Image 1: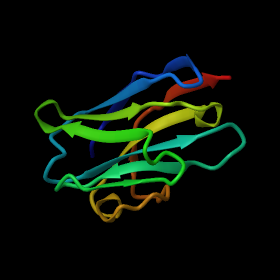
Image 2 (image 1 turned 90 degrees about the vertical axis):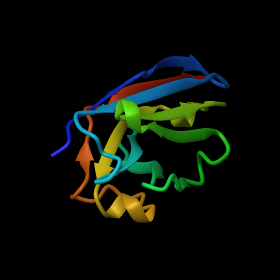
Image 3 (image 1 turned 90 degrees about the horizontal axis):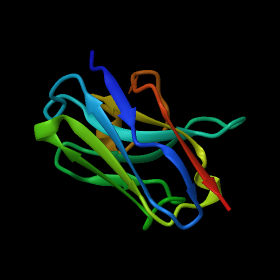
Length: 125
């Protein structure tokens, strides 16, 4: 089972940028597909973006054109570049790894997903 450690969260003003990182304990390139999810207080966890083994990506409508998911397989690291941040992007962000569901671009928090510990993003108006 893969162990994930996320980092890079912080507090920014609306319109600002942040880059989240997530380092995996093993090489995920041939076994897992990766993604980012978020959960705001009082709300359900929701998918933000996923990346498949061939590099294909899926984004939630709310972040399309603003967020970019990428990965560096040599460093076992997943990234989420977040630009033009809005107050409604405020949430705990979790990186995710899954061998099947995320590989078809799924954005629901299904039980088979391996989760990182979360990193807080706060966007002020």
